[in-house]
Amino acid sequence: MPNAVIVGAGPAGISAAIYLVRAGFPVTVIYRDMGALGKTSSIENYYGFSEPISGPDLFNHGLEQARRLGVKLVHDEVVGLSWLEKMTVVTKTAQYPGDVIILATGAARVAPKIEGLKRLEGVGVSYCAVCDAFFYRGKDVAVIGHGEYALHEALELVNTSNSVTIYTMGKTAEFALPENPKLKVDQRKIISLNGADNLESVTLEDDSTVPVAGIFVAIGVAGSADFAHKVGAEVEGARIKTDENGKTTLDGLYACGDCIGGMLQVAKAVYDGAKVAAHAIKYLRTMSS
Image (cartoon, rainbow, N blue to C red; front, side):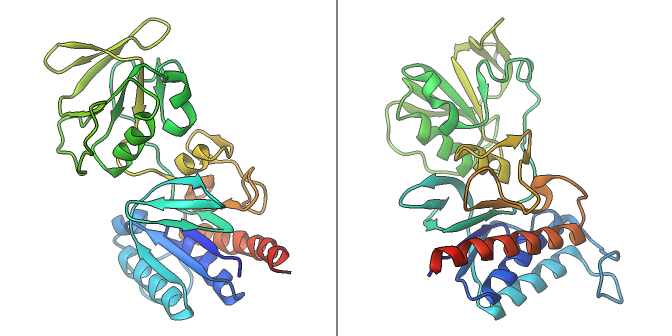
């Protein structure tokens, strides 16, 4: 039977999961944390609660509702999307193929405050290894980040680049570096990116300069727009481009909630999830008929 994989367990993702599983389809929801709800102490503008409810409590209510209905919940970090036999969600520990994939992780591309970074975006600075590794074949490149997302990008780049250095910007790496002579970690902070029309080098906190042809920013965890961009769906900045039903420019790939823009409220996210699920259900039914 066709299945759905949802990235994100906030109001948008869980709303979509509930509609899909009640329509009879296997649903897997993969989530890393509570997202924006984990930082919300009190919610009193959402229907159905006579007293304010905290963000974590609302999140956990959503998880329990989905679990009761038969949704498979996976606590893991998603590091990318890929094409195998079908579109597949890749986590730190496993792979989850889906006939429908719904991105609902919220919005956010984290860019460090480094002199020259904004100026050199598109001419040496990239946010997508899968998209841009081709342009740096045989060259020395770097990744900025200290988590699994940074490692994932570095492993993509090491296949084609001459060398890949992961700069953790003063932080301890949260991953085990595989043995590869082309791959290394440098804990020093990057102070500036240098070059007139293209990136040529980086200056580090000890004032040393290192030649670099490309910098790939992968700080924190990947967001929905990062995933969509990697498989060729259109994005506009940190927002995923969708039609009125939440469908991206790729068949079977949907997005809902904060990652598509609009009012950043729980009520809107729940509506987005329901709307996306309704269209995804029709799509899945055409596959099973």
